[in-house]
Structures are given as C-alpha cells and as structure tokens.
Image (cartoon, rainbow, N blue to C red; front, side, top):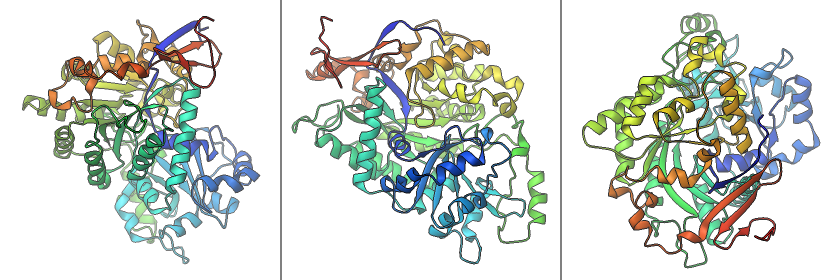
Length: 529
C-alpha cells in the first residue's frame, strides 16, 4: 500500500455502516478468517464462548464473519457440524456479508422451526431457495435473505440496555478510527429509542445520519411507520439542544430497502447468470419433509440464473413516493447491475412524471455505462465500499464472469462522469478503516478498474457530501437535508460549533479536532504543537 503522508479530512465520514451491527460484532465471537474445522472448534468451545451471550441474549452463542470461500474440506457447512460442537445450546453465526446465517438444531428448535421428531415447520416453504438444503432435501441450517430475516425476528431480542451498550461500544470504535460522522443503514424501533436516550443523556458523541431499513417487504410497513415517527422530530437539524443535547448529532434522513442480495451469497441481481451456478440448489416451495429425489431433480433444472430483484417496479414506485412525501430520501441496496438498472428505470419514470427526491444507491458493485449516465441525469448519489474489493477479488471473476469484471466497482468511471459518490466501510462486513478504503482503490487500479484523479480521502468527507446536495432537492426536503439549503442553514448559529476535522499521520492514532475550540476527543493536544 502507498506510503502515506499526513492529511486532514473535514468531518470524516463513513457513508455506509451498520452501527448496532458493529457493536454486536465487537461483543460476539469473530469467525473472520476461519478456514478449518479445528479453528472453528477452538472458537466455539473456547472459554470466551461461555461469556459471549451475556451481551446478546441469554444462552445463545452468537458469532459473525464466516466465509465459506475460505473453508477447506474439513468444514461441512451444515447444522450437523454445529450440533456436534454445541449440542445443547442455540448457535447463530452470521455470514461475513450479513446476508446469511448458519444455525444448529437447538436454534431451530428454539424458534419453533424444528420439532423433537426432526420435522420442519411447513412455513419454511415460503422462503424457497433462501433456505439451504442438503443432499436429502432437508434444511441444512443455512438461511439467506428473507429466510435469515424471518429467523432473526423469531429469535430472542436483546434488551434496551444491551442495545445502548453496543451502540456506545461501536461509537468508541468509530471515533478511535477517526470517524466523527456516520451514515447508519439499519435501525429498529428499539435502536431508535436507545439512540435518542443516549443523546438525551449526553452520551452521543458522534454525528449520525439515520436511515430506517426494511430488511424485506414484510418489514416495509413497520420501517415506514418508524421513519414517519422519526421525521416528526422537533428540530429539523436534529435533537433539541435545550437539555444540553447538541444539534446535528442525530438526524433521520432516509428509508432503506434491499432490492437484491450480495455477490458472496449469490443473491445479488445480475443481468448475466452466475458463473458459479452449481454452488446453489434451488427448490422453490418444496416440502422439506418429503422424499428428496424429485426435489433434487427440480433443483438441477433451476441452476444458472442471475438472481431476482426483491421488489417489482410498481412496488418500488410506491416506496419512493411514500418516503419522499415524508421529506425523506430513499436508499436502495443495489449490488448487481440488473438491480441498479431496475431501480433507475423506476426513478426515471417518476422523474418524467414530475416526482424527484433524494435517491441513494448503496454499493453499486456492478454498473453498465448506460446506467451510470442515467445516475448522472437523475442526480442520484452513490455510496461505495472499496474495501469490498479487497475481500471479493479472489473469487469475483468466478462469480460474475471474467467479462463482467470491467464493470465492477465503478468509482473511477463515476468520477470521470462527475457523479457524486462517497466511501464507507459497510462495517461490520468490512473493517472500519480509512486505509482499507485506500487498499481497495489501489487494488482496483491493479485490476484495471481505473484510478481516481482527486485525493481519495475527499470521498470520506461529509462536508463534501453535503455540498453535493445543494440545488438538487425541492424545498420540501429542507427539514432533513438542511445543508442543501445554505440560506436556511445560515440562520442556525450553533452549526459551526460541531465542525470537526480528523488528522491522519501515517500509522499514528488519528486525532479528531472540533472547531473553533480545537478540542481533541480522547486526549489533549495543544494547537501550537
């Protein structure tokens, strides 16, 4: 990686993180880098595993970060593997991309999906190929996308105090890495309550642009309801400062939906078929308790597609219009090129009818040139994660196809076209590190995906992000995007108090200053040094 000199980032910004998910990861078992059964066994049966559930939910053993692309032949990705290692305790291990979960039989029984006679709940049929199956056609303990979301809803939830402690843990982690501003992509009613309480207690020290996520279509109504409630917050610039709570620290800003899944789980929506089609067996609405022969025959006929979009055009239109009517933006998870196209086609149709609001495309890991031109025309803003390329490079061509690699990770093409885009980590999926961003950018250059002409760290500046909004939005969005309206913003005299800068000096610990007082978070440093 390039030898770095000192540089200063105004309002250092991680534009795409999962705040609570990061706190959960920091308090759970980490399976990142696990390759062998011996490593997995040591983790799950270690003394630390005995205390892991204290910070999540009692009795459950929770972990994060496994990646089957790293596993050798000693690990069978099946609930039976976890049953042997942890026979009497529910185990739930989230895949590195957050789009899948691996559970044991005790966990399935705890949520009522498996009975004592090894009979699976018939409702599992509705999740189709999001439920992994073994050679006998039975669920193997791997659940993706909608099935994972349903499992998460069925298992016990943490308490309010646990959620607050995890948010604080993640906040400290972000600040230690030099990030003073985050754009949080997931929020439940419990998290929203916890965040407001932290602000009211004076414990919130990081600036949060909050989105409210619908993990699937069944959660859309609840996410919209929460977004509607949050959008009525008293001050358009954040929480009121009357009780010592500073403005700008917390701002509801957008509704988030998932239009597709991930490349690693092969659930992203691509125009072309997945090259590694044999990695999946798809069985539609099969009866998991029936004889497997016909199911496997059906599965063999369903291999090779490019993955579905999770919303159709009419459903997307309704989501966009409802969120924009609240003065909120819409953040759309779009990893595959077909998902990007479908999202833009709907936005373009609405634009032709006179409807335009803040549109954020999250990830955009594959994009055709014609779609980049449409992003530019529509004024959409993209949030990208170069760190994903560091993880994905070893298998990218095997999943999307060698011919599709040139349209992957398009930040260089976006910069050439003048499309506004910003960088984040997608923590906990990738590490919270501005230098991980640099590693991804440099790797993209080596893979002939292009280079950046402007200083790369500018794309981590929230000040630059907010300037990109100026002149883009109708007045109805001024409540939650005040920086897009400089005249209105100038009326608030407290805004300058919270301007921050992060100084990065090679490998030294980042220093975070606030102006005009030049305070340092974490340790003192005189301005004349």
